[in-house]
Length: 192
Ligand code: ZN
Image (cartoon, rainbow, N blue to C red; front, side):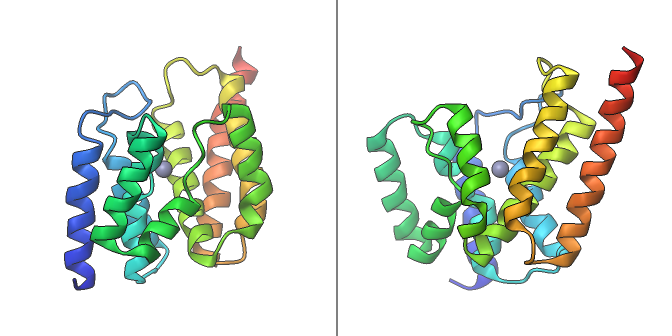
């Protein structure tokens, strides 16, 4: 497959896998918007052209968010490897949390493991975090308190510490997005 054929295949595949899911905000946004934004951010703002990176960006939440059992996970991994190859599968796995672990543990592991990731995985994770922060600025999950949002921002920064050094443009965007998010929710905290 050429790069663009593979990317289109990934879009088709991910949109099917995520077809019933919505983002966590209150605006009923289809989940697939998120991986598309991550891939587009890497390419159009980060200047990344690597087809493996961009395809894995489209697929990055498929394993984490669309399987419910270890069997399903293995099945899906085999399928992704069959369609997209082992390199794209490996990169997707590198940015996939182990959902059998508690959320608190997963978040801690993201901080601890960030620095050991491959170059591509670091770029993908920075773009993922920027996209999540942008969503939080525009449309945070309705049940999140201000403190919870501020906690999320600090956690994203901790993960970022281990990721930086791979794409200065994206890193600059990350820092600006963090500042914008913190400004918005700090000032809301002050009002309360
Ligand atoms: Zn994501």
